[in-house]
Image (cartoon, rainbow, N blue to C red; front, top):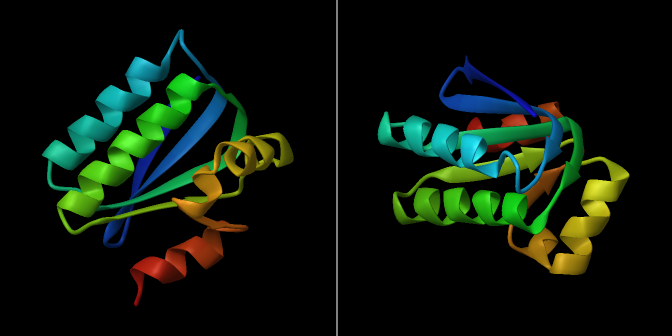
Length: 112
């Protein structure tokens, strides 16, 4: 898995590439924690190149979402591949997270 973080105006974009599973979920958890500890309160996760997510990966997303909500922040996701979208629907996570089809749609959330 590869994680690229970029600042985009008032929010941070996480671009995740590859597989998010039990072998590497801690890397993403540490990166979310680092960004939140550094004051980031608005995070957009672009899943355009995320090929697979395990239950460990879902847990990392959920932890970051809960932490940001507690701090009054926002956690938004976009560009879920069909297989990832299906995992979110089956797990019920689709109703917990703000998920958008495109990055442009997701960006608008932070501009309101």
